[in-house]
Length: 506
Image 1 (cartoon, rainbow, N blue to C red):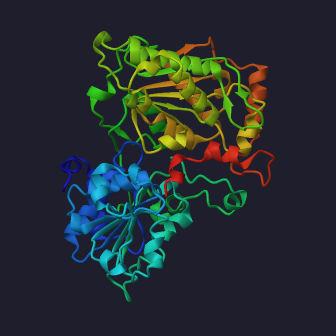
Image 2 (image 1 turned 90 degrees about the vertical axis):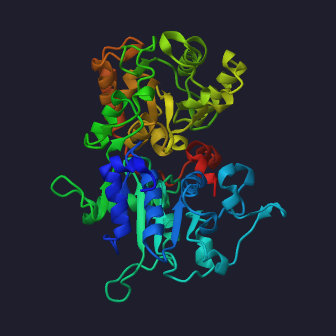
Image 3 (image 1 turned 135 degrees about the vertical axis):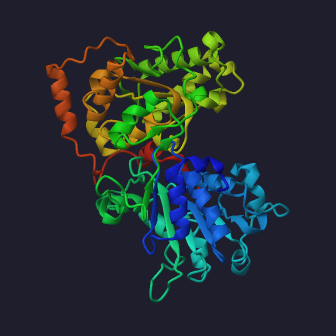
């Protein structure tokens, strides 16, 4: 193995072996990678081994976003010679946004200061071509011969729209047929069907099933990729089990709720335990805080996006304690703003939090600009040492609007899962417990925090009352699997709200 760390991980080694052996062909091979289990590292190792072990192999490595494609390239160039790897960027991409370490491998002419597109014959000489899924269409239109690429790898395939994934397959990959094409190609997909899928706004597309990625469709509807007698068939799918990201307390709830309790804690304790003695914890040794507030939902004009100033005040207070007051206390080392993330499902709350940081004492910190505030979609695939979540919602009367425009955390298990699994060492959730507990997942998480002494803030005993029952009935009546065919709010408002930043990267 190129990455010797994989020697100690049975599932990663098995996945690499199966890809190189090609035993799933003509069916795709799936790498099911829950949060922090190293699916991209596994994918990269498999690509390197294919190049080394299979003579004449040519690889197309793709992802739905530029950032994910860049990451693939950054890992690959460590062991693949420059003459064998080429990163094709779209004509529209800003060259300044390309990571410095892969610029020498990109389609950019330094003299002309513009992107270049090499001839088909020149491109065919590279063993690995890295693109986004959409840009892979250039290779199709260039009429690459079917069968030139022996392997197509798609990372982060769980949140790519299925036709987008097919761009990198149709017309490029000649699938294996025992009689007519015994050396046919191999498709490898890596992702997690329990995290956010494709982001769609078109009711027509949703009605026709395009919210389901190719990865999730295979895992949900094809018996080859489903558990039998409690385990997956290793010939077709490997589920990675060793989590290298989170403290055990942070991992425990999503592990049991979404991953059948199979994930194992293998993260570095020096990082994951770095806030276990923080004086602000509700319970020492348990690095989760659920801070209850009773705020007010607010919005501007006809925007579907909400903000909650009470929660913003609490967020800023925690940031001040993390960045200004607590440094050096009880052995805590200084944490930089880039190690902290703030998630909120509402674009307006994100904007208000950023403005609050700009007018607070924190603005004096030279690197405060590195502190990322964004939606759940913008944090998928990322991790932070400390994560704060502002849930915003405090009243039930806007649940229908959340349903119509696919906003918020409530009744969206995948969005919840992504949000709470980004943190390594400290997770702080700020929200109204009376509202959040009406959602089954949030209600169980709130109970998990209370049972472990991690709740503080707004006094809340969790008892049911008539208002709670009405709230629960309203929430349970919503069908969040569909969007309305029509609405009277500006499309630009909706797009601002639900469009993840990587959708604008191609």
